[in-house]
Length: 292
Image (cartoon, rainbow, N blue to C red; front, side):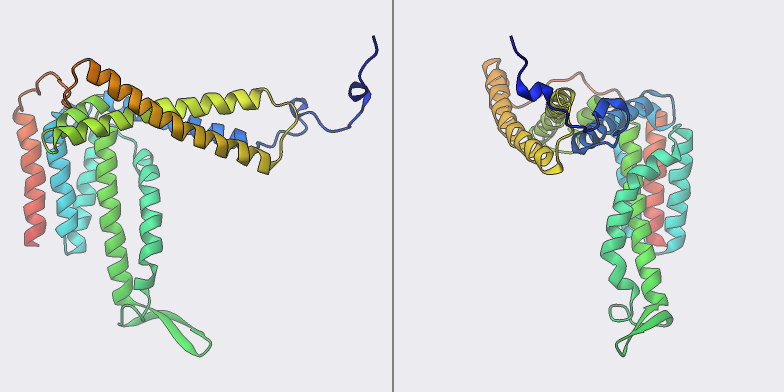
């Protein structure tokens, strides 16, 4: 028997496993992103399982109080009110044993998105007023006004505080408790669909992770960027088809077992003194923001 000709060829390319070419490729970066997604979900469960202020409050009361604080941010017309709400959020986070950097990391995308949208408000052509700083571009004066800066920063602070309240609620509430309490505020069918969608996102993301890991573990020579992107795009199309097929199969399985669109859960616990006190405090902040 003779060796095939391709086995005698010496290509001279570095092997990815020899440590000389350890730059992460497109697939490796996607695996890291998926792993960070699952680690973020695990951190959610860790905070909701700890013993803290918000964790000890009944979920319905928790959602009601946070909703009142969000409304307070929405109707606030003075920076002093937003400063007071920020102090309330800071106190609640510390008493609930939630790390501030965990909230800040999740609020940062909302902050950046709002900042990009609100940038024109800083300038005089949108908000006339007293100029603070400016430049001359092709004979046209473009300046940042005091009134525009105050208005933009006030709006950014409002959105950031609202996002911080939402993140604080999600971090301190278990998934099952959150959706069960949400049924008291929204139609049951909508909450059921939202819960099923949320659950099956993890199933589909796990399928993507397994496929990407299988492809990466069977690849010796590093593939080009275009080839990796083409393969990943094909997996996305496959996941879309699989999600539609899974939705149909789950619907048929639930219907065959007598599902009528309503998820039966055990009854909510009665609200105690602490729960009513929390709702009263949040309502007081809301009405206080209306008067100031």
